[in-house]
Length: 145
Image 1: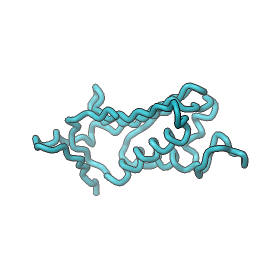
Image 2: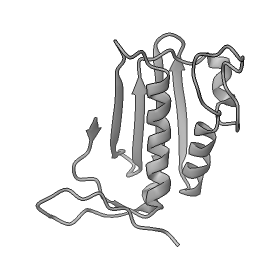
Image 3: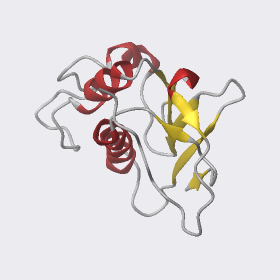
Image 4: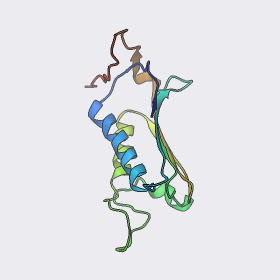
């Protein structure tokens, strides 16, 4: 986990941002080998001031032809009854909806057999100020109306 320690305050729905992160981590865990798997979570400000959340893994990867359909509700790369991974196919569809609700965007980069990286960008227009200087780190997200 690599989360920038001085991330600024962000105007958004804490529950949705948390769900974005949980859905991405859930997919990474689901499709990454238990013994040799590696999953990384990063959060930082980009050079343009956007808040970025990135989840990457060295899991099974996704065929390039399937990437454009991954955000369709109920779509699964392996839709057969014999598939080895559980799920409804809603995780990335919800991520897309929640990211767009924050005027953001996200991209999926993957190579079959090598792993996947998902990058979420929430716009600089929602970043409002640096966190106050306090003794203990805070995880604050302001709610938009």
